[in-house]
Image (cartoon, rainbow, N blue to C red; front, side):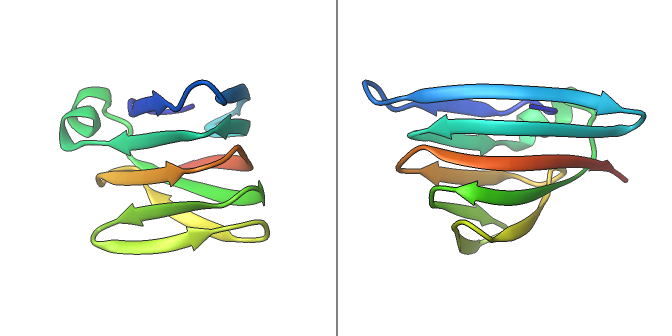
Length: 105
């Protein structure tokens, strides 16, 4: 929602909606999406100049999020902090819903 990233929808079951906006310097979004793969590469990081964090509150669905050789299962009730200045990968086998907050460094 707030930074360059790779995205691959898994048809034919893909569902997606995104409602996002800015409140001063803080970005807020409600995302319903899946099944899909999301990546952020060093090239995408260098290309957009956005540095900060995404605070993710998972509302529905499960996925595996990995960053810096760490993997975590993200499920309803999980809160994770994503460093958008580093490569990341998320595998969403099913539709998920999350609330996202962009926090700039």
